[in-house]
Length: 545
Image 1 (spheres, rainbow, N blue to C red):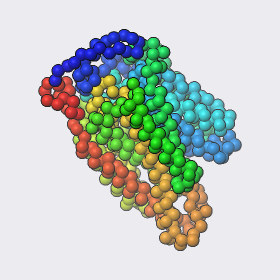
Image 2 (cartoon, rainbow, N blue to C red):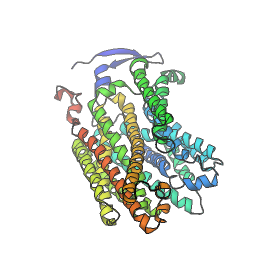
Image 3 (spheres, rainbow, N blue to C red):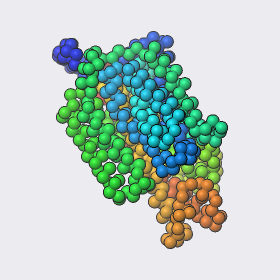
Image 4 (cartoon, rainbow, N blue to C red):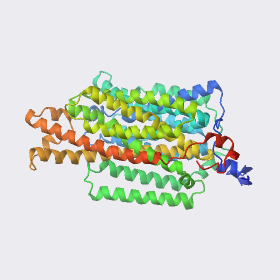
């Protein structure tokens, strides 16, 4: 196909000649990174990104076991759940914006800003003297953490050649998983020790500061030309406003539904409906109004991007649901304390880290991306389905082996999603595509935790009623507090625990179906033909991926 050169006037009034075929349509060269850096810079940037990613992922879950202590010390038992919700809302809402921000202002500037916001808000969180102060600090912290999460994948995509990204994306997956699982364990340790819950925040401040210094001196990725004022004008203001509003409204509805308010209440229904309508407005704005959209609609013309986004949603659905509900399973079914329950995730984490690194090295060596995606999702579906056989009498060894099987499946699955996205879109869409894909994974996690909670409550109540009668009072037996459950008389506790087994089985079954749906899309993924990308003339349709 022939190339067409056109002249484009940038926001700073400079005119440059652009090869439309090479710039707008051509996929990345598989053997060359978009940005070439020295070995020292590469190691320093990667080290800084991993520390930032670890810190942001850790603080996403570290307060899970510390919330009761925080609420007690700050004398506020009504609003303490917002300490976790505020971080989740802002970190999810900001992720789609991260890509376009880095395209306009440059990768380095956005990473530094995000790290600075994250560092300051983390310190403020540690020194908080009231619940409102802590909630606000956590909301700001979520903004920094959400941008960091997206930027790690984007920058790795810049400085690593496409064919060599496997091990590094595997490293990202391992860091994210380990930090997310270690969070509740570390939080529980600090809460129970003389250090106190404030060290849940202070512990990450030094690492964030070191990473910030490394980024400042070592990250030398060129930014787009233009003055600061011109770049501000390039921002997709209406897009940012509509997507942020839509996501926040939807997440509030999902968070409050079934807990703070009934699902059928006017509050929840209005939040979900208006959030959905706002997202429709966002799509119209991006398609018809924005000159430089934060979520370019042409991304959705790339089949691999669409399929990978659906797979990312299902993987996030499973991942976040397991992080919260596997420890709960061991607390309720086997009477584990908080620390023991957190450690029960180690088989998943260790297996995931191992399979991420091995599959990454294999992909980098042989370029076999699609088989790992299909095999990983197939094994993940099967291993989750096998959890249905577990009950209160199951061997801990068998349970841990099944969890390790889940981890082995998650490793290659999580990294190949990002590889397919970054290997299928044009270079100029790499940041936006990566940020949107990360957003879908996080959004899937929100839906997963919410749906797991709803299914668990509903199935437990029906199972308990079938065992103890329809008129049984759930005031004492319907609590998810393990201490309350195991303080019940044996004749009551046994049917309660058995009812929870039924509830968890329904959770695993639904999760298996959702992941199985994602598996179907891995079968439709188009292979990443690196040779055709390196030599477009070798095939008649070079942009088929």
